[in-house]
Amino acid sequence: MIIGGKAVQAQSGKTLEVRSPVDGLTFEAIPRGEAADIDLAVAAARQALSGAWGKLSALERGRLMLKMAQHILDHAEELALLEARDTGKPMTTARNDMVVLARYFEFYGSAADKIHGEVIPFLNGYQVNLLREPLGVTAHIIPWNYPAQMMGRSIGPALAMGNAVVVKPAEDACLSCLRIAELALEVGFPPGALNIVSGLGEEAGAALAKHPDINFISFTGSNEVGVLIQQAAALNAVKCVLELGGKSPHLVFSDANLELAASTVVRGIIQNTGQTCTAGSRLLVQSDFYEEFLSLVAEKFSRVRVGTPEMNLDCGPVVNLSQQQRVNKYIAQAQQDGLKILAQGQIDPNVPNGGYYVTPTLFGQVPAEHPLAHEEVFGPVLAAMPFVDEAHAIALANGTDYGLLAAVWTENGGRQQRVAKALKCGQVFVNSFGAGGGVELPFGGVKRSGHGREKGFMALEEMSTTKTVIHFHG
Ligand code: NAP
Ligand code: MG
Image (cartoon, rainbow, N blue to C red; front, side):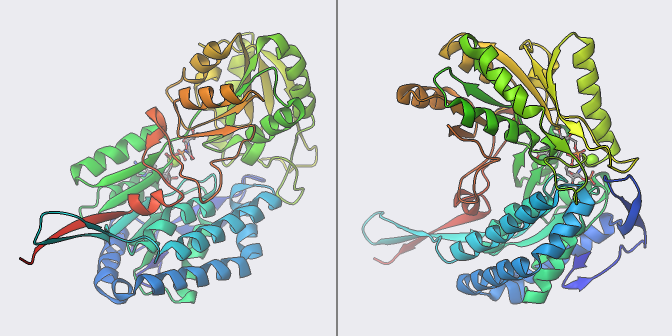
C-alpha cells in the first residue's frame, strides 16, 4: 500500500490471497488494510493539503499529471500483464485499458489550469469573485471490472483540482492500482497526495466511507453497497458520486444499418465478459424484422470465443467464483423458465481447469417482466425482445430501475432526436455504442444507476467546490 509517500504493509501484518480467475489458483498476497490503516491514509492526505501538494500551482499539478501519463505509457505492458493476471481479461483489452488510464491523466492534467472561477456583477461598490477550490480529502472506492481505468477516471479530476486522494481498490483486483500509486511516487507526486489502502470492502472500504475527515466519496460498484456509501456520506454531510451499473438497451428500428448494428450489439455485451456497467444487455428490436435481425446477431454471437488472457480471444473468465455462479444461475434459471437460447459462444477446450469461465448466451423473446429483462447479470448474457413501434420501444427501454446508457439504431433523423430525448439515462449513442464513451464525455446515471457525473469537465466541477468572495470597496 502507499501511505504518506511510503510503501507499507498493513499495521496488523495481515494479508489477503490473490486468486487468478484463469485457473482459480492463488499467486500473490496483498496487504489487508483495516480502519487503522485508513486513519493513517486520511491523515497523510490531510497533511499533504497543507504541505507540498497543497502549495503546487494548478500548472505544476497539471505538469505532474502529464508526466504521470507518460510514465504509465512507459509501463503499459507491465501494468497490462498485472491487470490480465488479476482479472483474466484478454491481453488486448488489458493493453487498451492502460492507454485509457494514461489518457485520464493526460486529459485532466491538461485541464488542471483551464478551469477557473468567475467574476459576478453585483451592486455598485462591490467586487464579487467566485473562487474554485479543492474539496479536500477525497475517497475513491474502485470496482474490479476495470481497476486501472476506474482508478484513473476517479482520481484524475480529483488530483487536477488539488484534492488529496485515498483509494480503496477491490479485493479481487488491485494489483494494477497498487502499482499505479507507486508510479505516481516515481514521477514526484508529493507524499500524501495519492494514498492507497488495499483490503476488504467491509473493513477498509467501510472505514474509509464513514471516516469523519473525508470531504467527498466517489464510488462505483453494486447497488447494495452504493446505498451504504450514501448513508455513510450523509452521516458526515459530504457529497458522493455513485455509479451503480445498469441494464442498458439497444433500440434497433427496421431502417437501421443492420450489419453495423448487429456487430456492435454483440461487441457491446461480450466486452470484458459482460462485466461492464454500461454493457448493452438488452436488445429491443422492431417486430417486423425481429427474426431477420436476430438471426444475424445469433450468427455473430455463436462465433464468440472465451479463453485465457494469452489466448487473447473475445472474452476471458469472469473475475471470481461467485461471479461465475451468479452468471450461470441466471442462464440456468432462464432455461428453466422456458426462455429460448438463440446462440452461445464457446469456451476454448484448452483453458485450465478451475478457472471461472462462463458461456456467452443470447436469449430471444424475453418477456419484459422476466428477471433477465431488468436485472443486471454482469456477464455475457444478452436478452432480446421485440417492440411494435417507437412508443413501445421507449416504454420498454425506460422500464427498468436503471438508467445509465442506451443506443438508438435508425436512419430516421427525427426519430433519432425524439427517442434520444425520451430515454431516461445518462448517455445515449445514436448508431454507435461505447462503454461510457471517451474520457471527454460526461458520464453517469439516473434512477438506480446512481447520480453525479464523471469524465469530461463536469467531473472537475463534481470534485471541487466554490467560494463566493463579496468585497465592498465603496
Ligand atoms: P461491490 O461489493 O459493490 O464492490 C465495489 C467496491 O466497494 C469494492 O472496492 C468493494 O470492496 C467495496 N465495498 C464492498 N463493501 C463495502 C462496504 N460495506 N463499504 C465500503 N466499500 C465496500 O461489488 P462486488 O461485490 O464486487 O460486485 C457485485 C455486483 O456489483 C456485480 O455483480 C455487479 O452487478 C455490480 N458491479 C457493478 C460495477 C459497475 O461498474 N457499476 C462494478 C463492479 C460490480 P471489496 O471488493 O473488497 O469487497
Ligand atoms: Mg465485494
